[in-house]
Figure 1: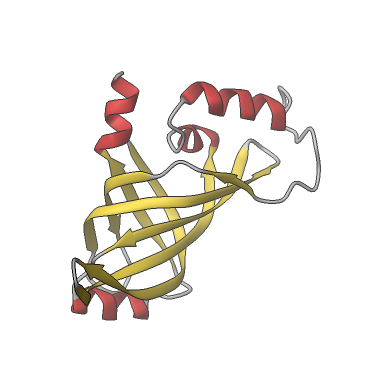
Figure 2: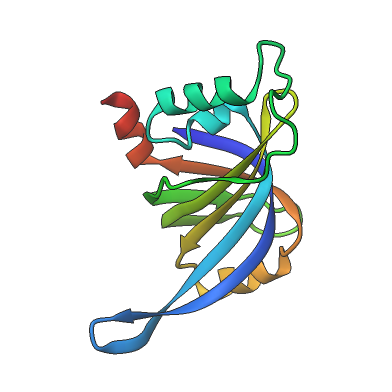
Length: 156
């Protein structure tokens, strides 16, 4: 599975991680991304495509008009480990982060069968990448999210 989309980097949050007895042995980074995804892209963020199909029919009619207006963000408890997240900013080098986790995904159905999304990427970028990420705050950029876990679930 691979999702290609343009998302906005809303927040970069550094966190200290404990490894065994050693406090702060590594620095993890939480990225908050927001944007709009098509229904076909949304289906890939669920462990079960059938679940998304049921939700989709609950939110939109056949003409892709919302059945219920004024819905807020709806959480999805899917947690994907060992993802690769590639960011393609306009004025700096691309950033490829492997062994990332994608979680805390929330979506808000919009007219036309699209969804506004919020998601968190937990990763371990280098110091140089952290500095570059700080310079990308509040900017939209193309990105790709790839997960072998999602691929394996799709094949099952």
